[in-house]
Length: 378
Image (cartoon, rainbow, N blue to C red; front, side, top):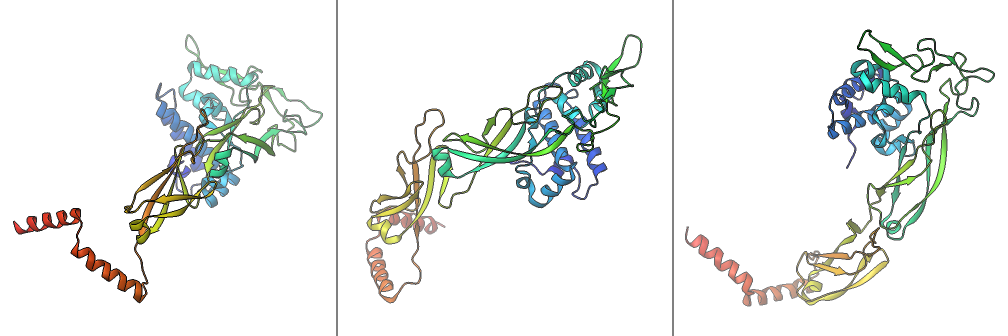
């Protein structure tokens, strides 16, 4: 399914400021928040769609690429795969975990806080890979380039400058969570100062500015099985972002896009070609060349072929990923009306037309007889 325009997703104009985009995201995230829409899968999908839009539009570089080239301009940018991400991870990713915890609170806030303080798996990333029909037919190896946030080599991912260490957070006392309220009811949420880590960086690393992460280009080679379909994801284990506090890397998902073919169109495992033939070939029959993935194939056209007739070449389609059986190639013929006739061709066609009027086929005669009866009664 085609992705919606990110500005439409957040309900803002293309000229919107960074603050307007941030406010719009918060407003939409509250509207579709899973705690507000329990069990509503559509709301959860829209919540994640908003997060994807905000990731791009809140980043000046990604926004510039998107404004200039659309979704295609984000290829290789190491986009997060929000469809596979937990809602709690989305909170902490944008630093809104305390904001949402303050609105919805309760056990969810405690869960987010506890998740933030311990080891956690890294985020999954997604990118695209474009394949020709020939590559889909035979399988392929593709080299993928993308950018991901890797651990900073200067500070080994701590975010603190060399010779210094993060210090214990004074707000939460190193627990990573704070409690609000009193008595029997208390609301526990992620600490707004340390974002659940229990530590703060007083002397940030100059290379990563305290984030512990730096963008790094990655190149991987992936094997793509024959028969893949548009939109399918190829998983590359461990090529996502590094985990937190020693957690494992996430994965990279390469989603397939099919490059348009000049002559062929895919329909499941079948291939369709539309081939024009002449009036005389249709009437008298002929052997014609038709395009296929294996060069041109010869196809016999019987006499009296009608416009739109479909012929099947068995086994010339694409393989099924599970059974490996090949589909067929379907050839639909269209009949071209001759133009720019020379005098001899025009003379022959006029002679044929005279013969045709003297010997009208039964179907045509029946049509004209019905037409006369219809108008004769009015």
